[in-house]
Image (cartoon, rainbow, N blue to C red; front, top):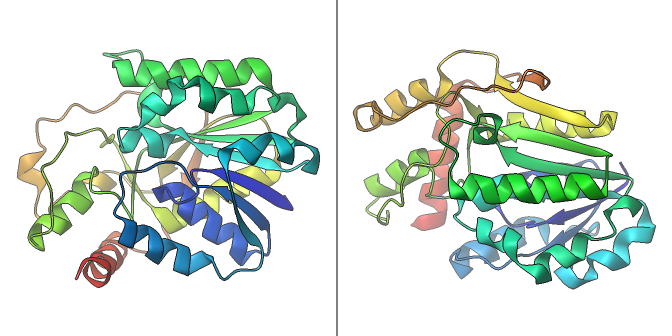
Length: 270
């Protein structure tokens, strides 16, 4: 992979993917989507990567102009789902930017692992499934990467971990409800390493990223002292037998990784 276009570049997981690609010397063109995020936080993110000579911001209308560059297109519907912005996938103005997907060398879609079950499928999950099916009908060279709960610096407070951290700082807002899957939890830096490894192999298919240890979400909840608040939350059962399961090596112990997230929140929000 020499070049990448990342749609929603300042969203949580996508932002970390962008930083990792830039660290490898890869040219990244990022599309900033409309977001409810605090403008000060966006400024902080832009400062982290904006000075890199390999990073360019483009508009969503510029995506068709990138088709002849023969690069990789990355779209995280995972981030849209976790920030309650999946309605964007219904917009004709948004979808029309992807009508020529067959010209891309490689398409990578990051998706919530909740989609791997037909049990109690929500309207939001149906929107995402339908969008992914539309994309797959346009290009069969797609890597579909399913993610469980991802945590780390820049995690939105629609995740329970970040919501709890900000509440302890008296910075939290009303919780919008539990969307993340609590079967598993992966530190974002470790996750991004695995994402890039899969992308570099350029083998189409569906992949489920999972931890190398059991009960990581529950261990993280206990570390933050929130276990008693989530004991009744339904866990998802994966039903797709054709998916390739990829173990994400936990290079950083969970307590240290969560401490990094806490320290980052204190630096950004105070």
